[in-house]
Length: 245
Image (cartoon, rainbow, N blue to C red):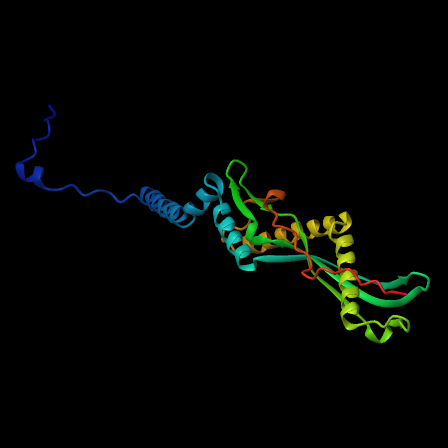
């Protein structure tokens, strides 16, 4: 008859059992550890950027702040300039004598259109992840009349032209050309289109320096309520004295 195995002694109970080395289980645990370490590294390294890009506002806030700083630094942006050339003839008439003074003045007139960036406003539309820039309309500034004095033709033997009257003539020409050009829709439209392009270029330059790249868009809007008073030439021409026959 087969005898049952003897009960283990207390010494055998206290003796630790040796575990068998299982290579397959070791490899699985090793790869699992590597995967956990890789996921931890990715979460620490790229987690904040991914959060800002897909959950937060990307780099919209950062770009809008830099955009405001750049506009404050520039203060004013000249967006368009026009130059006209021509000749203006100014004549002085007298009773009975007819034309007693005639001056032909060849000129070159330049006028710039500028946007006052100190009046601009920048806000962030978080719903669409868009930077909204409100700009005032371009205004005419810096009129300049240049006269080729060597080509000026004077006929003033009956009524001599004085330096004061000659300066008034040039001021009148400059004021006339300013009034014609400052409100010309063709120039105003071209100035606004250039302003929009310049703002988009500024946005692209700022966004390209961000680690997140371009994660937002920009919208340029015109707000005429931001416009400052239109600048005009300071000199006001005074009426010319009438000669007596």
